[in-house]
Image (cartoon, rainbow, N blue to C red; front, side):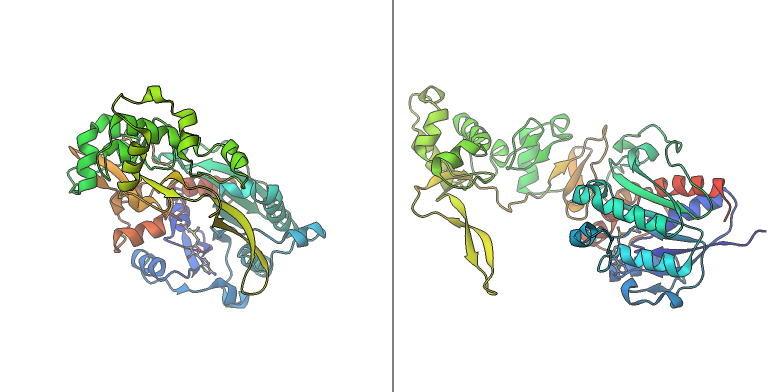
Length: 435
Ligand SMILES: C[S@@+](CC[C@H](N)C(=O)[O-])C[C@H]1O[C@@H](n2cnc3c(N)ncnc32)[C@H](O)[C@@H]1O
């Protein structure tokens, strides 16, 4: 049998890239061996070692000299994205020191492998007006590689997650196209959902279920910051106290009005997303005909303040202040000289769940900060995503285990490379050139 393809797994996380490459090798009956892994997050390291037994995982790649890394054919890296110094680039040279891409660059230069596969957020394409990606590609080409990059969506690879990522592939011997990689028809979320799991029980969930049917809930976000028909607000379910039809209408209107630039102009302050509006200002768009005979606008507003849907506060304006180092910094401070107004209480307020996924659609891009607050419909109830479902949303096989509490597991999953996409890219690479 041919000798094994040796690869290194940098910024390894849960090993999504590794699994994809290994799957492609298995399909093509090629031997493959991971000769070096680096990752710094203790939970990721532990999980990686549980799933890839006998792996030695090195820590911070920045302090590992290239000589310590064994020779290898392929480098895998889903490196964290950081903007490069624009000053450096303006002077006509790309200085990537201080960024984690620099570590990829260093190891490629020192070890001269046959090729690499890199992954990053799709935003890299527009980061720093496209300069960051341009710099990366320029450096990789100068290191002696034919380099191709493509933004691919996990949805096209049999995984019901709308996750676009940029993949950058380089080969020393030839140019590889990522354009026409075989894709598959998107599958809906229902394909990976489990059933009969324990559902959530709380006052918040009871209120959601008593105000809406399951069909109505599917696909809805729950937040007070924005309007739109796909959004449920705290007042729609009377979360912080009962509101009548006029108050709901008032809150929905305030949601739109308080974002308008004209209010900032009228108040003589810098615009911000959501300003308090005075009774007089509200009267200008909420005319008396909106009110029933027995209703009084001020009383309705004050009731919403008492129930904490609204705050009664001074507008904030941007001012320059000196920080501890005597540097001028911009800060938003309340303008006590301006009259108080009514403003929606949105702040950092977050609900038990942020979105109810529609089983007939796909999951949005899953990110560490929000995965834990996504809900799915299970029978007559709602529940959080399970870790198994989370793993399936990244194309992991059933054998992969994460032995961590949900929050910590999702924290790792949110940064993971989708195995199925990586498998197809690896397949393309391995078929065009055996390493
Ligand atoms: C985008 S994730 C990588 C995903 C992973 N490659 C996969 O296949 O799923 C980036 C990872 O880099 C790790 N990381 C960040 N800085 C690091 C460093 N200096 N050395 C090693 N790992 C690092 C993070 O902990 C995180 O798990």
